[in-house]
Length: 295
Ligand SMILES: NC(=O)c1ccc[n+]([C@@H]2O[C@H](COP(=O)([O-])OP(=O)(O)OC[C@H]3O[C@@H](n4cnc5c(N)ncnc54)[C@H](OP(=O)(O)O)[C@@H]3O)[C@@H](O)[C@H]2O)c1
Image (tube, rainbow, N blue to C red; front, side, top):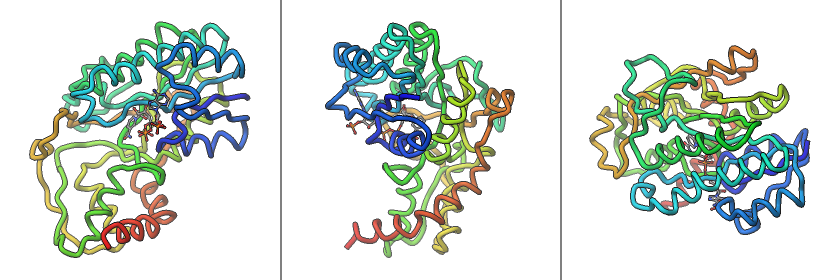
């Protein structure tokens, strides 16, 4: 298939480009070449390329900055997806759009997961914008896939796993601190990209959750990273509320991949197994980069 991929310089977009280009023709315009907030650029590009599918990994993703940049966030996270959905409808192509666990309020009793049809109730401006992005896609595109994912890590972007390593390699840091009351599923961007490829293979339609199987706290995730890298430092527990951040974050970020399972295409592995696979491949490189940044 001919696929336009947006956001390929980002963490998920980078891996999507690598995975999808194995079986598809990928055109990956930079933000300069196609800004999704610009209707004219969206329409012109779709009209010229006439793709079968548009995969949208582009978004404004800095959760705390979203609290104060309402205009920019709306443009990239709501108007952009609306432009893409209307463009896809006009030229008859499928839209794959990425959304987030942050559309939920995280108040569900633990360890109950969120399902695809649970009601959104975002706590933050970012979460609200992602919720509205979904509405824009559903209202405007007759052929779409919305993939909700969470706690992403990968080699080509900044993320929680890399920040743990950056802190852990500092000699003067004797112990780390991480929340033991926020629950979720650390998920490798490479795996989400493979799942998107599977969804395209079966011509999936509708809203899907795609996160690693099982769940943990931020503290357990931090311990798992240190254990795999054989870094012997203690991880002290704290509460999510101890971190003073501008945006509120949900405590329960667990998503169940129910639609993927119902359709027999869930390929998401257990979170710990996949985190170990990621660190086997990239751990040494990330540690080296983190040490180089200190000296
Ligand atoms: N990171 C997570 O933990 C997480 C969790 C759940 C869901 N998600 C969702 O997953 C998707 C990918 O996230 P990510 O972490 O991979 O993002 P990311 O690394 O921050 O990358 C965002 C990408 O979007 C591009 N972009 C932003 N505004 C644009 C615009 N107006 N027009 C065209 N391109 C634009 C950026 O281009 P430039 O680099 O040129 O600015 C960049 O390539 C997003 O929809 C995000 O909401 C992420």
